[in-house]
Image (cartoon, rainbow, N blue to C red; front, side, top):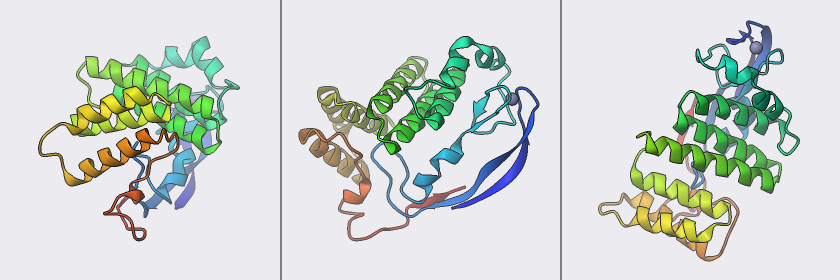
Length: 230
Ligand SMILES: [Zn+2]
């Protein structure tokens, strides 16, 4: 993982500050069923969000801001969320960004940003906080789907992700329903078919922890490069 410190001007209030920027991180391990990347990209999560110390604006790219974000950032709900004691600090930053994205109608991205908050909570073993974030993610994705916004590549992969989120929430019946709906399609790609089998086996064991694709036959037997990300 390579990082760099760079000066950035806040797109909302214009304050200048130095931020640690993620320059590059490979993904050498397979991802999780909920798409969380494998290491070392996995551990770069805290660098995926920045917070302006002056106005509290949180975003992945803080030098840019949606024209309708200003009132959200100034709102009491947003400002309180910045220091909500129920969540780790970084999770609050992701949640705040999700609040902005939701307000401007970018529901799919809002859902993913809430998922990033959930992963921060996972890393600090804050299970209750992680559950609240996963519920936010499902709410945003559901709102998005009503407006025709996809949050992943195919209906099937969306069902897999939603199934995994329900399982991590301990909602095993919902998890199984989503799993069955996603797996019933014909011509399911091999990888997705194996993912649904893994998901079903985790559900049957009432497993609440992460499900990793490293447990699939095509990945077992050692780490394997699955891609990279800037
Ligand atoms: Zn600012």
